[in-house]
Length: 336
Ligand code: SF4
Image 1: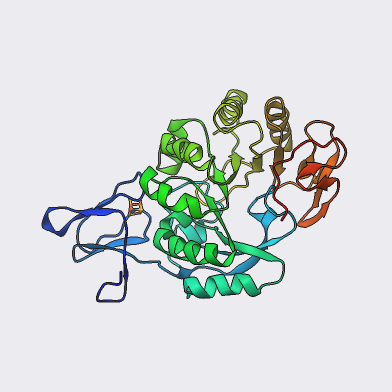
Image 2 (image 1 turned 90 degrees about the horizontal axis):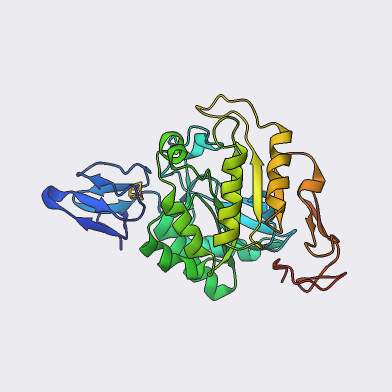
């Protein structure tokens, strides 16, 4: 619903005394007086109503390979028209996209209908990706666009921090085809001190999303912060026990950015994490490194090369109708 000044009224909020509102979209639960912005900078109290400031305003529009998200088990080799809001509900000191997530930048308007039409008319594109910053802070726009996309056969994907409350998640998830979820650490202290958030809501979102959508997990390993063996093992165990051994896990290499000055992740740390994870999980990848073998998908049963990735160039090798072409093992990769 549009307010008198053209803004879209936000969903999931309650009115309090003195024209204050409380936003219930994410676990930050911001209480805002008139004129105040939420932590995410995407929602504002306008005279006692919460409005979605960033609705349909994108920081970028780009036809990205699915592998860039990264989504390795969702239409390998295809593209997603990618966009995102100038908003984020976390304050990660190491944010790799801080220029567009933590500062105000110019945006361009694209209606839900236009976004879906662009995706339909773009070569090799299977759908839309809400990404770059925090798409859940674009809730009303993502929901509206996803409804139109679903009716036209256009896929919807999210690259998200998963820091959202269960009720809004429940309404959106049935319209989402694939998610790459960032689990930043299994340490609540890390979430509180480094990201200004909490761990448990992210884990709850992962469990909520798993039965409803294709789910891949990314963990950015930061030296001295979340890269100890026991921390990696805790993540691997949690993914295995709660999401299942078929859930793809991407360990990603960190580089110093924004307020974090720790040196880049040593390759050895990533390889060690990968080795530990492959003891329990069937599909483990390493991102932000040049070694192509770490991006390929192999059959967990017979070791056959199924999908070969070199940079963003992708070759479907022995994957046939979502099965290993050598031994017939069922492989959870959507190709058509
Ligand atoms: S969505 Fe934004 S305004 Fe709402 S609670 Fe979260 S950070 Fe605050």
